[in-house]
Length: 307
Image (cartoon, rainbow, N blue to C red; front, side, top):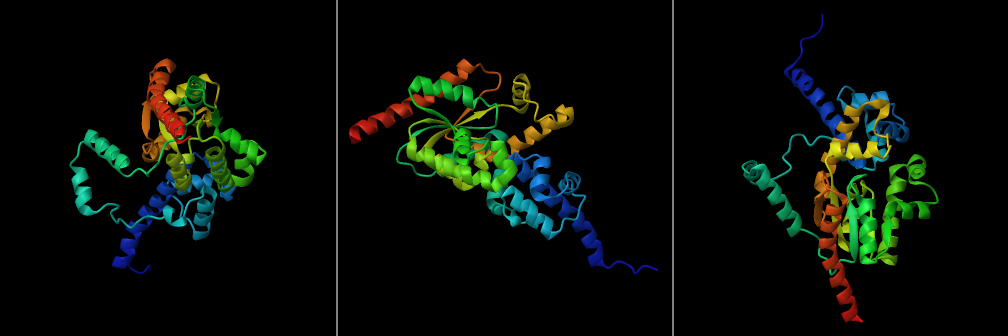
């Protein structure tokens, strides 16, 4: 005959599934922010894809050892994967006030906060384009550099030149930690050697806080934003089928949407946002030029005066 459960046992039965689900949600969220596929995370952590799927859906009781392996593979702190025990992230008074705002008011409040708490900068050196792949960074960056007479630099190419291998090989052999180190070193090189340039950075750079703040402190940043379904159309039009593992369009669209959702707050730290969905290259380029040219003219004027 089994002993009767105590009140604590009953309470634990209620808490444990939620705890596992919370960890799984955080693992999936971090993986999305980093833009890491489940297969790549499996290769880097040594945890099977099947078990990773169980972790992310809250169906596995993950050990501390596995949690540490996941954190190391994604280059995130272990505590970042743990639930916060329901503690509010904001003071109660502020949280209550924000709850009363409409979606448009929340958006306005967010923009005001971002503007108010931006790091101080003496002068912008160049223009940096941020956003997810196929957002238009290369196309618009090349057009802008030609128009302004500035060098166009793709940070991924600098990483490959300094690392001596393709980005994919860096990630496969060294994982996220090695790639993020090379990414930071590449950015430092650009800041030193080509401060006045049009720079295209990878979509995941914003998830590395120190590197992103370094970028923001030295470049005027423009987020080229596009809706998930628009990005999927561009991917498929270019013949890039990497997101369609198993030819599952809905799953690929869901993953892409999640990446954008998880990175949204990071991308919104940019100085300017250009919505590219359902707009021509010409319209987007002229908006980018309108916001960039006065900054470069001002920078050049300051350079002439200092001489």
